[in-house]
Image 1 (cartoon, rainbow, N blue to C red):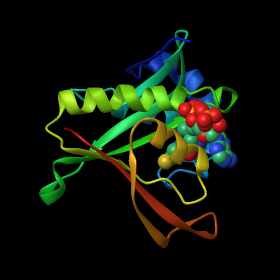
Image 2: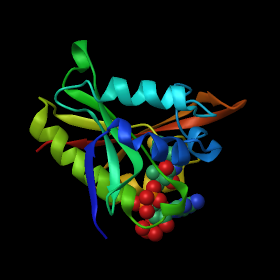
Image 3: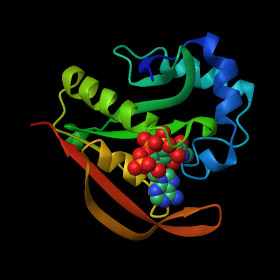
Length: 166
Ligand SMILES: CC(C)(COP(=O)(O)OP(=O)(O)OC[C@H]1O[C@@H](n2cnc3c(N)ncnc32)[C@H](O)[C@@H]1OP(=O)(O)O)[C@@H](O)C(=O)NCCC(=O)NCCS
């Protein structure tokens, strides 16, 4: 299984909309990830992230096709040595270890490319698959905040997972 990351390109738009337009994916992300995901929103996303240099958001590529997205969001002010990690994988490809591999690749890239000491992710308390992928990629559970998230009309705990640059 060949998994790699490459910057998003407008030629990936069809795959982005085909796979990203999924309620189960949007339900586990912040409200800035829209559902439904339109071609217009997809075009804006690719235009925005492909302007970053160095790149921060990548397509997760399986056998040459974009089948997910993963990105780092460096923080500012006193948190500037930290970056938040976010990702999703297309539903037909779940449970094959692809997120775990993509997380390992972007952590390596992030620590090499940016001046970071810590990368963190904040899955919802109900998101067992994401927590497991983070653990398999070497992240530790740092905290569980009670009911900080309100998504689709339901309160959820926020899990904080982190990995340090040794
Ligand atoms: C979370 C997500 C990225 C995981 O992608 P993936 O490629 O399936 O992840 P992996 O296969 O690397 O690892 C997932 C692990 O969780 C396990 N898992 C899946 N669903 C589970 C569940 N309901 N309960 C317990 N474990 C579960 C899988 O079996 C796998 O573990 P294994 O390798 O030991 O079998 C994918 O489900 C997704 O895109 N979800 C919607 C968006 C999202 O949640 N993004 C993350 C926000 S923090």
